[in-house]
Length: 68
Image (cartoon, rainbow, N blue to C red; front, side, top):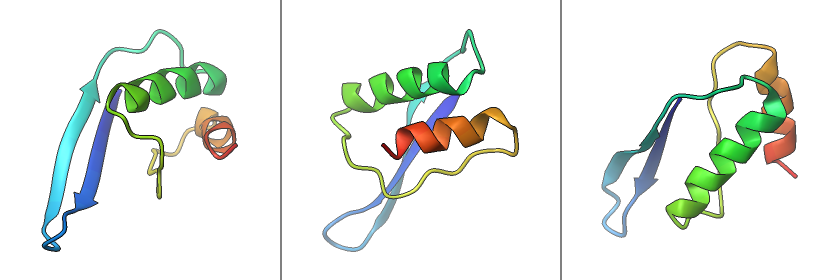
């Protein structure tokens, strides 16, 4: 799994950072939420504006759980 953060700085310059690139042991939505949440918190990111995922069924559960 690759987690990429995109953000705009105070000077309106767009930045992109790969914040994690790791293997995952389960594609279940709930397991994905735990992994994603842990990696985001490691970077001190607790507010998310948007999530983009590929078109697989487990992503529905992941997105619903992440929005809670």
